[in-house]
Image 1 (tube, rainbow, N blue to C red):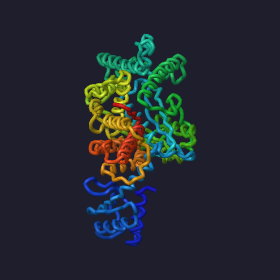
Image 2 (image 1 turned 120 degrees about the vertical axis):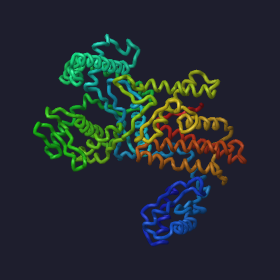
Image 3 (image 1 turned 135 degrees about the vertical axis):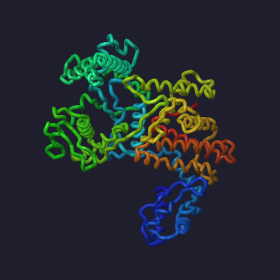
Image 4 (image 1 turned 180 degrees about the vertical axis):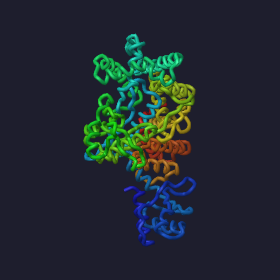
Length: 593
């Protein structure tokens, strides 16, 4: 039982005994630095059940807690805030109990618990991954890892958009202008090669539109009648009818792209437990629609199209089958969701990591699944996130102005190298060692810069700013971890022995232990809110507190051997916690930097 829980229960008891009232919950928070204390009880919410002056109520409860909770040594009241001072020995005992705990803060999932499936990435096979995909992948992967650490089984998945007119555009352009190029013949990753032909298609399409307009066509007519677009539409029709030549080319080109994606995922440090492909799921859901018509969930219009009426829920009518019987996106999403639960019987909920431009789509999807009677539909969540902008403006795939994911990772590595060289921190290291550190720091800086921002907010990404060794950056946190490892290497005594003698904590040591103490609840909160930013900002606070400790409290010049050992142990525990928290964000740490 945590101290916070003990205090909460004692406050409820105090309210019953002193005021003959029942308090449902107690609001606790960390005491602000300008006041004495470690834990603060907010008195104002109690006024709903206890009438009186909040300062007097705080004084009364404070006296009760000093007399009834061993760990509470004193208190002070500031307006409606009751600040409790906790005995140093509590924190020393707590530290002793966790300093050797493996995977501290993590909860082991129970075999009988339901699993959560997290979908992320979900790229199109007509272009390589770009900066927007990086935010998607980093968010999805981190959320999956955080949920797993909180005590849930997790499945990571994606659906690859490998069919449709946009795929055929790349195929047509390759046929017309590719001259048989392959990844092997060009030395390009497959996704980059195909992406080049997607851009080539758009360039030729615009040329043809201009020619048609010059010949007297309207802009709308020219867009529809451009020969290269008609070729792509014809190719899609052939693919849908199973034309062997088209399907064979489609398989070949997609395989090139899949191989390219895997290289990017490996470099980015994300993985998946399963893959779904739109080419295999686009027919799913049609049978479900027929069942839904019988249940009255859907209705047919005169033209034969099928709709779902969501007006009672404040939304519109939504088409789920066209009049010719073909599916729309929502149809296959319904089918895919059901298929995933069929494939994994223990799924109890799903999280879709998709940009906020699809907010309405997921509201509709979740409502329809609920109307169809699936109990797990109550546990579906759209992890909606804002776009990533650059100082130069918005990215456009068709025009080839996207920030390529692979190139960005290399740029981050180069930025880390430049920053390191200017500081002269890696003198005496081999070139291989330097490159390894540049990679860890560059990628860590990229990930942290993106994940420290609340998912709902847009990001203006600045590569140079992200590798700064000062401030709220990944490299600053990694540098602190490396500093701790240097301290541990320097310790020429047995720093693993238990400390039995009572020692007096410096306020900075106490602050560090308090931060370590809240790591488990921080993980739980981040999992509840689906927000890696909570972990990122927690580890930044921990690192700031450690640097304050390091600069003001002598480790090896301590007054006693016990204090020296304790401070090394505390440094080690902070280092382990930094590594653990960054690991949840998919960020590695360097032993030296």
